[in-house]
Image (cartoon, rainbow, N blue to C red; front, side):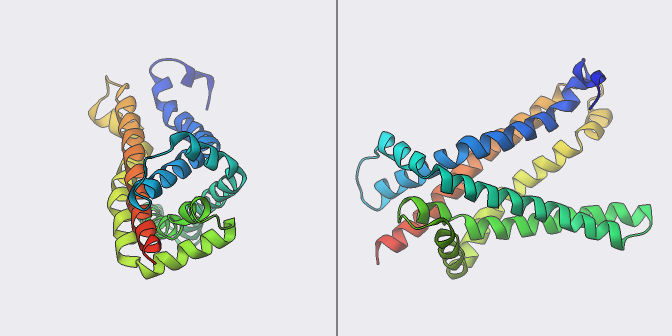
Amino acid sequence: MGEHFLHYPLNFLALPRLVFLGRVFIYLAFAGVSIAATVAAVFQKEVEKSSVRYWGNFNRAVRKIPALFMLGIIYAIGLFLIYIIPKLIVLHLVGSERFLTIGYYGAYFFSFIFFVVMESALVYAVAFLIVYKHGLFSSIKKSTLFFKNHFAFTLFLVFSFRVINFALVLAKFKIVSIINKFFPFFPEFTLVILGAEIFFLLISNYFIIASACHLLLTKEGNK
């Protein structure tokens, strides 16, 4: 990245990459536990109609850390492949620089669509893992089957939130161009974009998980 990125104002341009690396670590270390505890809380409130047992939910999630970590690894590998494969295809198929730019935007679009489908297929896995105590691969299989049976709802739920996340991610990738064009004397605008992305990511994660698991747990609970 270079030593000059340690000094003002270029240090603000280095923030997106540093925040991304930090988010990967935080997700693998903590997000699985917090999502699992949220799923258990939704089950207690909506299906059992009981009070939420926060400490018990945390303990239940902690006991599933190995499986949650592996689920996070599978998710991360899928995300990496979804991101890199369309770009590699564009590099091999497109010759001129003009069409290369168009191809990259097309690659981002298809990556986003594949990402929405992947997340939709996996969004119920934590509930099967934590509430119904299935194994990792059984939970993934059952999550995929439940997604197929509730395709429209799940896809719309994930898409409606992730399209805004995607727009903020694109803005982050183009942060240098945005600052140079609109905010040349305000490099701190990087913090605005990063803050908006992180805030909306937290909100969207909660609503996606809570809404999806509410559907799953009420459907399964009524059987």
